[in-house]
Amino acid sequence: MNLVFLLIIILQGGFFHTGDIGEIDSEGKLHIIDRKKNMIELYVKGRSVWVSAGAIENFFLSGLSDKIRHIFLHGERTQSCCIAVVVLQPHYFNSSSLNTSTLHSLQQVLLEDMKKVGEEAGLDDYAIPQGVVIENDPTFEWTVQRGLLTATNKLCRGRLLLHYKLAIDLAYTQLGGN
Image (cartoon, rainbow, N blue to C red; front, side):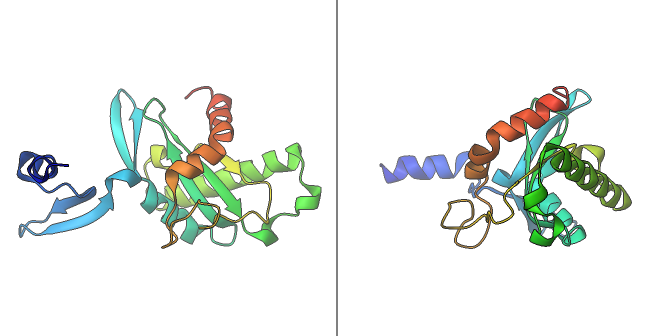
């Protein structure tokens, strides 16, 4: 590729595009606050709103660490809410007695817990998941070897979406398209 052409693309508008999102404070200093690829766009009350998926995931991981081992937040720009895909802590449920009824009960309890801790922390309603997909195999791990985590243990969002796409679509359908 032509180096000049590459530089023109990288320096569009006089900025070096890294994929980071930052804010400039009152002293003119730039603070990196997130990655563009970790942002979710939702359509809420006639306007687009942006949610930092990583920040919300970390919030729920710390607030519900007794229940949640892994969490992946997914949102779509045509929806007004997000869906959480979770792998529960092994001690939280008995897989031998897992059926549709117990899975639904676990989803409801988890949604109530997320709503409670989210509201207590002052999260916007649209940042609190309205649907939950639970990985029903408690031995299933999101790992680098499975391609669901990077070498630095960050989520591979695209691969997680592919893995759980049908379940996420079903969750949105159950919400009525929201």
